[in-house]
Amino acid sequence: MSSLLQLFVYIPLLGFILCSMAPRHHEKLIAKIALYTTTVNALMIVSFALYWSSHAHVILTETEYTLYHSDEYEFNVAFYFDKITLVFSLLGSLLGFIITLYSSRYLHREKDYKPFFLRLLFFYVGYFTVVFSGNFETLFIGWEILGISSFLLIAFYKDRYFPVKNALKIFSIYRIADVGLLLAMWMCHHLFHQNITFYQLINHAAIHSHFQNHSFIGALMAFAILIAAAAKSAQLPFSSWLPRAMEGPTPSSAIFYGSLSVHIGAFLLVRTMPLWENQFSVRTFIGLLGVLTFLITYPISRVQSTLKSKIAYTSIAHIGIIFLELAAGFQNLALIHIIYNALLRTFQLLASPSQVSFLIREQFYHFTPRVKSIESSFPQKIGNTLYMISLKEWNLELLVAKLLWNPLRKIGRKLNFLTLQNSILFFVIIYGAALFLVYHQNLVPIFIKSKLPFVFAFLAILLTLRAYTERKNALLSWLLVIMNHFWIALAVAFNENFSFLDVHIYLSGITVCAIVGVVILKKLGREETIDINRFHGHSYEHAKAAQIFFLACLGAYGFPITLSFIGQDLIFSHIHEQQYVLVFLVALSFVINGIALIRIYARVFLGPHAKTYHSIAYKSS
Image 1 (tube, rainbow, N blue to C red):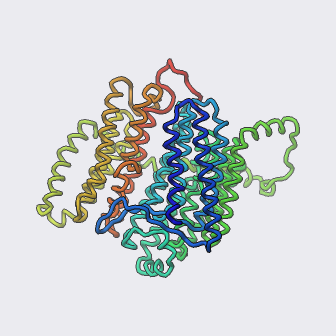
Image 2: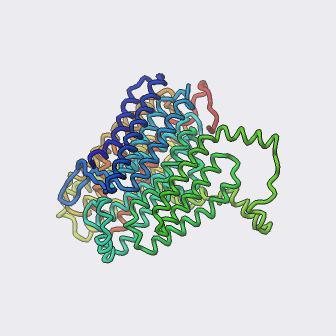
Image 3: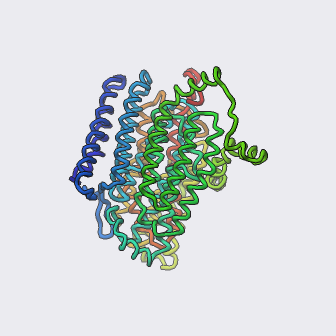
C-alpha cells in the first residue's frame, strides 16, 4: 500500500509533461489534460484516504530510491502518509480541481493560456511532493518547486512592470525560506548523524535523548525551521509580500496565496513538531510571533482599499492564530483551522471580481454608514494613530529593506573595482594558486589551513554581493555568481578531508549552466541592450533564448534539475557542527546567488518592452 504514495506526485508530473506537448493555442485539449489530471488525482486520493481510514490508520512510509550514497551521506527520496498528509492532500486535491475548472474558462482567449496551466500543474507537483515527503530532502525538492512556480505565476503578465517587480521581491523572501530549511537540514544531519525520516521523528524517546545532550543545536534547528515557515506563510516581519503576490491572475492568487502555498509554512511546523514541541523557548517564540502577526495584520486588513489585499492580510492574521494554536499544542485544532481558512479564502478570491462590482452597486444605491465599529470604542488619538500606521502597513516592506537588503547593497556598491576584466584576472590567478594547494595540502601549514575555508567563503560572499548590486553588465553579474560557487567549493575542500566527488557533483551542474548562460548573454548582447538597470522585456522577441536562460538560472542556483541540487546538500554536510560563521557565509551566498540570477533573468527578459514599436502594457494587472 505504501508503494502507491509516489503515484500522487507522478500523476501531476505526467499531466505537466502531456500539457507541455499540447499545441499552444489548443485551449480545449490543454484544459482537458489539466482537468483529467486533477480529477484522477483527487479521486485516487479520496479512495486511498477512505481505504486508509478503514484500516486502523497505520502510518505508511516508503523509501523509493537513493539518488546519492556515500559512507557519511545518503540522499533518499522517501514518501510518508499520516493524518497530516491526509488533511493537506485532500485539501490540495479538492481545491486543485476547483481552481483548474475555474481557470479553464476564466483564462479563455488569454495569449498565455498554455503557460498558465503548465505553471499550475508544476505547482501541483511541488505541493504534493511536499505533502507526501518522508524526509527533509524530498520535502526540499517540493519546496523549491513551489518557490519557482510562485515566481512564474506572479509574473504571469510578464510585459507589465509591477507583476514582474513584485515576483522578484517575493522570490527574494522565498530564498530566505529556502536557506532556513537548508540550515535546518544541516543541523539535523549533525544532530542525528544521518538523514532522518519523518517516521523516525515520532520516536519521542530517541528525539528527547538527542536534545538532552545537544540542546543548543536543537534550539537553533527549531528557529531555522521557524524562519522558513514564517517566510513561506507571510508571518512577521515578512508579511508585506502576500498582498504584492496578488498581481497574478485570480485563480493563481486563490490557489497560492489564499489556500495552499501560504499554509505550507504551517505544514512545516506541524510536520516537524516533534523537534520543537518540548522546547519551551521555541514554543513561546512561535506563539508570540503568531499573536504579534495577528495584532498587526488584522487592523491592516480593515483599512485596505482593494479586496484582494484585504483578503491577503486577513489570511495572514488567521495563519498567525494557527501558529499560536500549534505553539499551544493544539495540533488537531490547527489542522481544522487550516481547512477553514483555505476554503474560505479560496471562495473569497474566486468571487472577488464579481464581488467588487456588487459592492460598488450596493454602495451606490443602498449606502448606509456604519454606526459602530471596533475602532469607535478607542480614544480618538489612538484610533487615528492605529488607522494611519495600518494604512502604511506598519512600513513592513521598508523595515525588511532597511534591516536586510540595504546593508547588503551598501557593501556591494563598495566593490565596484571588480570589473569584468579584473574579476576574471583575479579568479584565474588566485583561484589557480588555491586549486594547486588543494591537491598539495601538505604544503600548507595547519594553522593557515584551518583559516582558509573562512577566507575563501568570505571572498565568495564578496563576489555575490557585487553581482547582486551590479546594474550595468549582465554578463559580469552572471560570472560573479558562478565564481562564487567555485569559491564555496574551494572553501569546503579545505575544510575537511573527503572524496572530491562531492565537490564535482556540486560543480557539474553549475559549470554546464554557466556555459549556457554566457553563450546566451553574449549572443543577445550583440543584438540588444542587456544592462540590468531596468526591465527590457526581450522575451517578446527572443522567447526561446528566454526559456533556455531561465533553465540555466535554475540550474545555477541549485534547483532540482541538475546534480547541483544534491551538491548543495553535500556542501553543507562537510561543514562541521560548530562552524556557525562558515555555514552562515555559505547560506548567505546561496540566498543572494538565487536572487541575483533570477534578477538577471527578470531584468533582461521580462517587464515592459524596451522598444517603442511594441505596445506598452499597463503597469499593474
